[in-house]
Length: 360
Image (tube, rainbow, N blue to C red; front, side, top):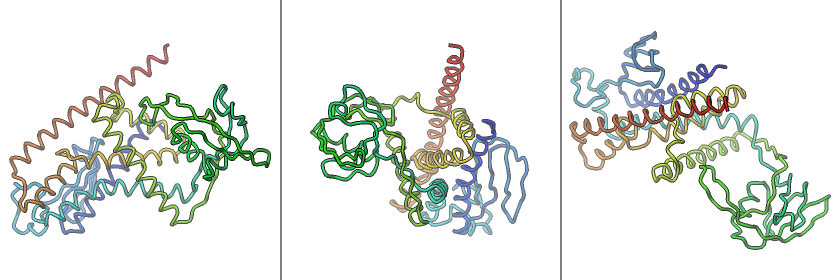
């Protein structure tokens, strides 16, 4: 599958679900929708059903739902007032705007649910595959093939759990219960502090004992309730990491060079597609969460900016003035344009760096 086709599939699915959320919420609350568009710009083709023109537009970098009375200063035919977005209660408007990013979360949950239902969960066994030389593990006589069953009399059921317990030890001696050749052995060793990198690429230090996993996994089949629970938990964990990443980016802890735009997404989508359709679908879920969180940011032009104005309206009992909203929208558009230029620059420089590596 080509990079371009993979990119179009990913964007198409994400945009469709996002706009579908807005559309269904609008119809639920009696708001008239005149356009449901995948893409921007000139209309390529579509079909009008009732008052809604369902269309595919030329530029595939987004989409929109056009509602009656969407702009507060637009003149509306008195007959259309019952269908007007602006004339609906502020809480209904909040629900309509929030439905877009919420449907992106829903898409991720559905994809994760299918994966967990079909494949179950896969957990690395706490079996040692390699012992690092001159490490606490080697000093403590740990060996390849050892199964660590407990640390300080607390049971260990996965490699991640074991690694976290070692990291949390603060360098205190650990009492390990090890299964070797069907015999239980008790060993004591002290972790050492080593430089490492976290998931965000930041330089950190953590306590380790110098062992690497064997790669053996525990596969657990899940019933529908367990799969749904795991999908919610997985969506939460991915969302949490993304929020932390954005916070670190704003604080300057992470370089802005890590930001990517359409070119990066296209490249990643193509790479995942080459690995298989399952990888591409999983990638869609990951990007869908990303899109949802970004849309909830309180930046005018984005859904989060509209939500901010509506929350202020709900609290003060009257809407924010049109002039202030227009100024905020212009400021938000300027910020987004700068961000788009920056991520395009990052994408292009990253692309040329990859080309240069081929010739070095």
